[in-house]
Amino acid sequence: MSKDTASENTARLQGSCLCGEVRYTFTKPFKLFQYCHCSRCRKVSGTVHGANIFIFSDQFQWLAGEDKLTHYRFPDAKHFGSTFCKACGSAMPWITADTKTTIVPAGGVESLDESPTQSIFWDSHADWYKEPSSLPAHAALPERKPKA
Ligand SMILES: [Zn+2]
Ligand SMILES: [Zn+2]
Image (cartoon, rainbow, N blue to C red; front, side, top):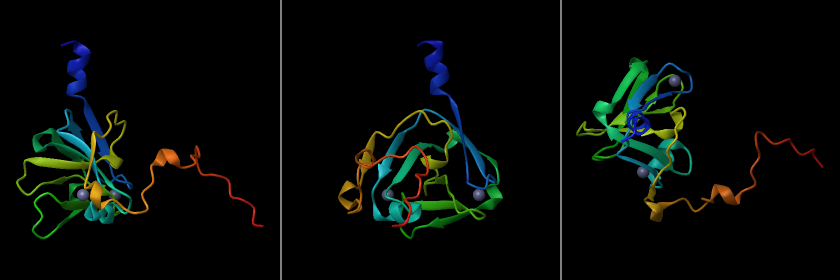
């Protein structure tokens, strides 16, 4: 194994919420990185699917703002929960009921250089889902069209 490969495998990633009060760090490798199209993930994320990184809980550490977090544990769900920043509402990492796994919502992670390897609950996907590559892509906020 080359030195580069070794450092890549233990690379430290960081993430934060929108207001910046909550910050965390974790290491590779990922157990899993996937999109989830279930209706719970759609509701909790407010968007078309969840995008979650799974790691062992001992790879994860809070850096700041743990007291700003609040948690919603879905009744009877072993593998579904939601932790979020009380100040800004951003989805934050949460620990599964058996505490072994931590699930990190990928949107808050900086400089993430891996991509998901699968979609789950595809049979539940939103009817309005469209492949992003099939949509017109604007580099930033598009100019408003003048009113006719
Ligand atoms: Zn926040
Ligand atoms: Zn889901």
